Every structure is written in C-alpha cells, then in structure tokens.
Length: 145
Figure 1: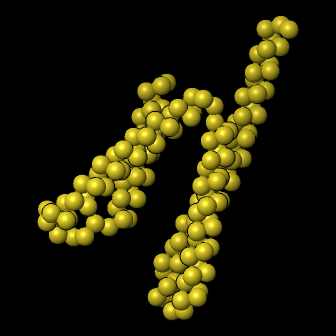
Figure 2 (figure 1 turned 120 degrees about the vertical axis):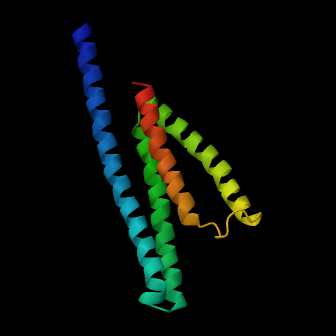
Figure 3 (figure 1 turned 135 degrees about the vertical axis):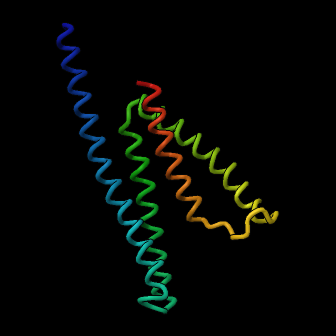
C-alpha cells in the first residue's frame, strides 16, 4: 500500500464522517425544533387556547417525547464526532455543568437569604446554561486550533 493509497483512504473516511455529522445535525435540528415548538405551544396553549386538563396532559406527553427524541439525537451526533470534537464538547459540558450548579445554587440561595427580592426563574438558568455551553465550545475550539 502506497502513501497515496493511505491518503485517499483517510480522505474518504473524513468525507464519510463529515457527511454523517451533517446528517445527524439535521436530525438533531428537527428534534430541537419539535421540542421547542411543542413546549412553546404547550405553555401558550394552556390558558390561551384550551383549559382542558386532558389536552394539557397530552401536550406534556408530546413535549416529553420530543425532548427524549432530542436527547437521543444529540447522543447520536456525538457518535459521529471524532476524538477532537468530542474533547471540545466534553470539556464544554463539564464547565457548563459546574458553572450551572455553582451559579444556580448561588442564585437560589440569594433569594432564600433575602439578597434579591424576585424569586429565581428557571428560564434565566436555562439561558445561562445555553450561553455558557456556546461560549465554552467557542473558547475550546480556539484554544485547540
């Protein structure tokens, strides 16, 4: 086997990995949109479209199923990553988890101890998690370039 054969094999493997990553990213995008859409419809619809508890329970079940689909799709996307991409994401997840626990508990305690007047809102914590994860991925990607 010549060096050009090895190069061609590695090039083809790289193309196949990128194609699989794109496919898995599209699948994940579908599930994220399904989850966000079903959650938005549920939160808006409970008081504005319907008042029936059965419809709310069905909406919760649909949102839960879409969320599980999103988690599975994310796991499948990670399988398509190479070791370098996994390292970037794992480090970003570790940092995000740690910061979320520390900041989230401090946020809750600040209300409990009277430091802030407004009760902590979970939406702010979700926003913090998203922002922390995105910034961590960007910083890790730049650090390893």
